[in-house]
Image (cartoon, rainbow, N blue to C red; front, side, top):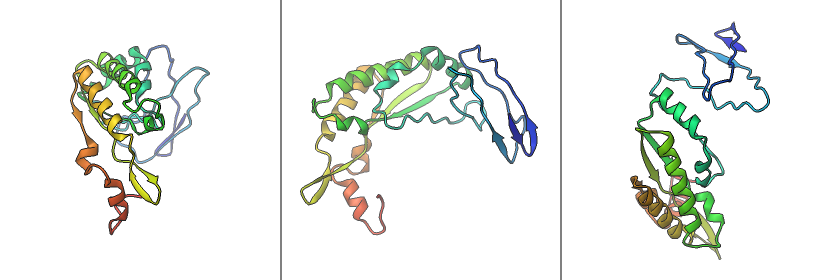
Length: 193
């Protein structure tokens, strides 16, 4: 329930399909207020403010990308039918840097490749592109330096993309490579915090 431009709005989804949706504003509106009351076990993924075929962003903060392999295949396929994705940009990785037991990140390569394969299976017809992790600084003595584990992570990401047969964009190199975050933080004006 809620309001659209000050007028009451009540809508109910039966929740029986894998993907359920309802049009809230058949035409443009200035203000939308929602109060979502989900039943136990129901998942609410979001509100789309664009036409079919627009841009969606599915954040997974705190994830290194490996959990992509556990996405519900039926839900992905339903989203693809509904939204018709043509391009999916995937960028994860920095959260994997906290695990230093395997500096070559072989475990990560396997998990990320499995997740990318899940996306391919669930989003047929969509081009999937993996974008690497960016620079990240750590303190070594009195200096801030690029995380020494980044090369292993970047190599694992490139290998996972190759394993799956999708394009890979090395954002670390594109942003300037080692020391970029320190340089950006020290620039005038500051380019990073």
